[in-house]
Image 1 (spheres, rainbow, N blue to C red):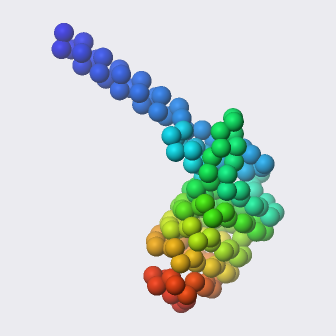
Image 2 (cartoon, helix red, strand yellow; image 1 turned 135 degrees about the horizontal axis):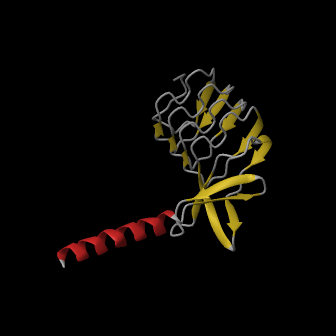
Image 3 (cartoon, rainbow, N blue to C red; image 1 turned 180 degrees about the vertical axis):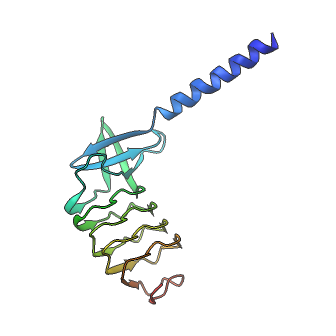
Length: 170
C-alpha cells in the first residue's frame, strides 16, 4: 500500500512538471521572436531567432506584443537573442525591459545603444566580440555581469544620477 502511494506521488509530480514545462512557448510577431515562460505573469522576452536568418537592419522592440489574443509585456532581452547578428544596424529598446540576458549581443554588429531607464541588469558576456563603440547607461542600472564588454572597444556615458557606474571606462 505504501509503495502504491509513493508511486502515485511520483507520477503526480512528473505530470505536474510536464504540465508546467508545457507553458514555455516561443512565438514570432512582426519578425521578432519572443519567449514566454509562464502564463501567470504575462511577460515575455525577446528570443534568439532559431533559423539561420539572423535579425538585421533597424529593429524597434515594442513594449507589448499580442499572441493568441493575450497581451504580453516585453520585460527582457533573452540570452543570445541577437547572437552573431552581423547585419544589425540599430535597436530601440522599450522602457519595459528590465534585464538583458547573457550573451544577448555576442558577436553582433551593433555599434551604439542607449539603454532605457527601466534596465537594472546586464548579464554576462552581453556585448562580447560585438562592434559596440558607444553605450549609455541609465541611472537604474545596478548590475553588470562578468565580461559583459570583453573584446569590444567602447566608450560609455551614464546619467548624472548613476552613482554605481560613473562615466569612466570599465
